Amino acid sequence: MDIKNTTAKPIRVPLAGGKRLFLSPGGKGQIAPKAAEHPPIKALIDSGDLEIQGVNPLQRSAGGGNPGTGGTSSGSGAAGGGVRHTGDR
Picture: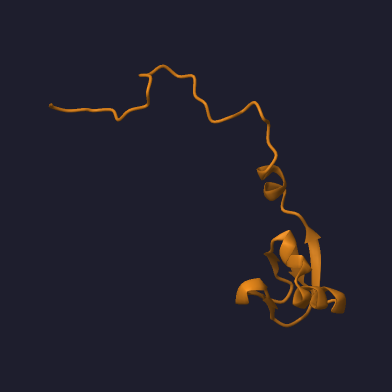
């Protein structure tokens, strides 16, 4: 989820776990959707200092995807997936 600093000053956004996100004036950053429910962030959004821009498109599609495109390979090779030995033995 993207957030934007709407003030003319740099801002420190307090996150859960004692972490902070520093945003320059007009700067954008990313937070987890769960972090938007953190009371200090809600207060900054309500006061107008922060603006929620939306969800990052990469994060939206990361959990979904096509179920038929798993991690299997159909290339030729030895069955068993052991270590390939090269060189003199």
